[in-house]
Image 1: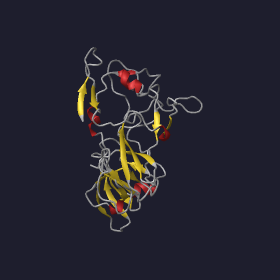
Image 2: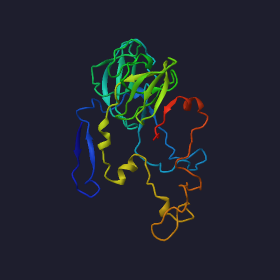
Image 3: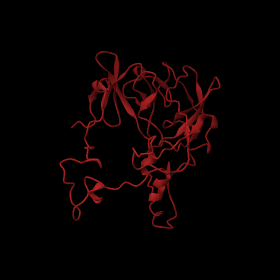
Image 4: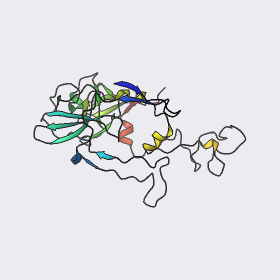
Length: 280
């Protein structure tokens, strides 16, 4: 996709870099029956207290109902549109099955209007087709991978992302997959995955250019703790640009928050990891 620049009428617009989707997108409005209202809470819980910082505002948007489970098996579908989704980085496609059902799916790279896809254990190895991961040949690039059988795609769903099938383990019950984070892990053979790379890989070239664009996305500014006062943050205070004064980084509430293990009650998940993403 082509990159386009805006007219630099101000210092904020001077650095803006966008992607030209005119030749890629084929529809401007989503199918209303597959959308729903998105409720915003600005990072607050039921009591109105902020539990997630840096969230608030943003333009109104509707949620698109994405078919991550691909439950319609052995029925071919035709791609009708390629659309923009404001809720995710990847593009989405509206597909119409032969039985009349319509669904939204993540658009793989190379999929265009008029192409046919299918969810089947005997499907061809081409972008958009979904099948059990045990039936996918070694070296194939895949995305939208299930972690538990029939739970729906949970991994590798962002724009330009893909995982690679490496082979089967010694027990024959798992398939070894290399994730985009370089982590190598086992996936149960009954899990489904989609062949191909997620489209819109050029999104990394986008430069928002000004803070107002982030506010339109619902992202509030992030202030470093070291520039705050001691009463506001554990890293605050001092004369000039000093260090944090602690052996490890702390949160505003005095707890360690960088390099701390947060995975709990997931012994099964941890046992399937062959090589961690941070392995030296």
